[in-house]
Image (cartoon, rainbow, N blue to C red; front, side, top):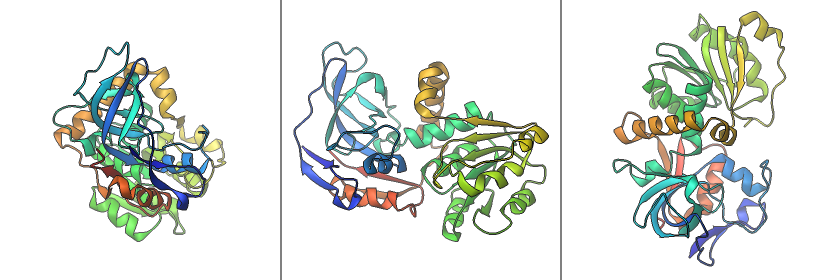
Length: 324
């Protein structure tokens, strides 16, 4: 089968090659992959700087959607012909993958493959962080840092669907325009002087929930712009590292700083995670949210898709489709 093979940390060396077909082991299924999303975390894994190292060579790709073509011994959840989607961690940028049935969910008939593969890390992260960690309520102000990327754009759509007023923060005029186009109520440049004051101007009572995927220099001004009792949810550090903030801000504002990591959330809060997955898939299948898929690539062009996402200039989501 064809697959994108990663045998070097240099993303310019990525190549689509012929590799051996995988065989499903016990409690695994063999999946014909129809679509896979390309996310920033995939590029970290390929570059060898993710917290979980992967021995080379390997096939990257986490979020997949497709059709079951073979089931291994002791499989009980799926049958040949079932439409499924889920998280593979690696192996997704290929024609087929052998994957544990426990990592998959049935794909509703109304959910096409290109959207089903998006019901993975970026959209799950945004939903969990906003709903379960941020406790966002209708009518509240949601501030999204790094709003033009995969998780950020998902947060804008989900926040609006839940009835929030969404303030999107991004680094360039093009990114801010994109955020407004997909539904943000207000946009604020996170790189211009006076970022904190600009946030306070659009949230005069202070933000109720802040979703931070960025870290670095934007965290403290965003924390200062929260209102009393605000919830500040930390998801990642795309700017390069965590920020150091004066903790008296938390005391004076009566606010909460809450961390979120998808694997721990699913392992430690499985009931809530399953409820969130159902709710997210309903939003996607019903059309209440329409993900901005700004990059569509074939498997033959998968290396270009990866380099686009790694460059950090991409907007919205990027997928590889029509794989098998």
